[in-house]
Amino acid sequence: MSKHFSNIFWAVMQSPSALPNNGHQDCLVWCMLPTAHTRKISSRSVQRGSALLAFFLVVSVAFLALIVSKLGQVVPPQNKSDEITDSALQAAKAALLGWTVSHADLPGLLLYPDRNNTDGDYDGTSDCPSISGNTSLLGSLPDKIDSNSANFGNCLADQNNSRPIGISYLRDGSGTKLWYAVSQNLLVGYPGSVDPDITTAWLGTPAPFLWLKICSGSGVPIDDVAFVIIAPGPPLVGQNRNAAAPAVSNFLEGIPNGGTGACAGPQSNADTDVNLTFVSTPQTNTFNDKLTYVTKRELINALVVRVINEIRSALDRFHSQYNEYSDAGDNSGECNANSNKNRLPLNNTNTNSGCQGKGLSSLPTWIRSETTKGWFLQTTYVKNSADQVTLTLSNCDTPFVFNWNNTTKRTDVMPSPLQCRKLAP
Image (cartoon, rainbow, N blue to C red; front, side):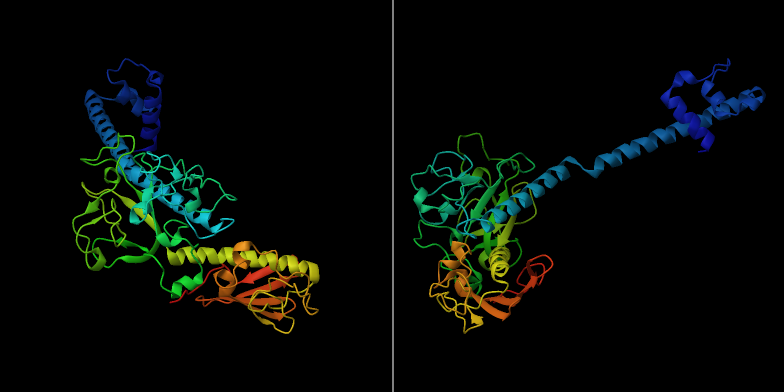
């Protein structure tokens, strides 16, 4: 198509009335040709021009139709729905992980799901269950703690940190709320009586309860999963979500054969079987759940970042006041001026002349209150010099080196980003 043809074609498309009228039967042909030659056109030329124009118009229309059809294929409805679902799953995962890592009192601990057998509805609050066993570990994804529940004392002690997670708006591509399952290892209270010790030590010791498992449908499961977030998708045949509080089976489903080992035989996301397995396989007409998850290693690595940053802040305050880092503490956290290597120097209650101030007393309670377990017991503190400290965590092969920066007047930590490059075992 010539440049002349293109210009005239788009002019005609935009304003047909702009065409001149010279009495010819086919004005479009006249417009396509240079004005100086119009009077020499024979009827045969006009016919050839009309045929050529018709050909160009047919090709142009076909080309435009092809473009429109291709544009429609860029983001078809199903792909758009999948994109919304994937975004919702990732946003929920990040929000829940961020919520627990930043918890003021008990970082690493999680909420019970929102069940329909405690308050009779999926109301967005974490239900503190009065039931034991795995049935309390699966439900709708909660946005906050049910502090009005009669069983509140059995759940996450969050009176000082009762804030929404910020995920109440999230829905999958079908507009359905997300679902959530959590390992009992990350829950406070009923049916346990002691707060879990969620530290790097857990990576090398057996957990008191089962972790979740993910079955792919054709192999061994993914073990040691901390929590799972599931997008139910639109209701399938036989699922009815119109009741006040529909059963789990109206949202989640399973597959007839899950693979080998713990995944052998039928597997379902709608139950909390003895192995706490969940299914992640391609969608079919009878299975349309999609899920994401966080393993205990991912969770603990995120907690390591929080721990290191809390210690950095305490060291910043100490060095700013005394122009050096503190000497090491003993096994109880008492500062010992004769030791440059042992535990975190939490206190200087004996006013040891070789120690300064009150030690790292500004560390949060969840790091410093327990000297028989928790992060204090998992941390080795080494004072290399007045301006350098090295920390190591149990089961983490990465030493974290703290260096005082005289320019910024704060502590720099290496390596960056902060993480255990290898976690045992």
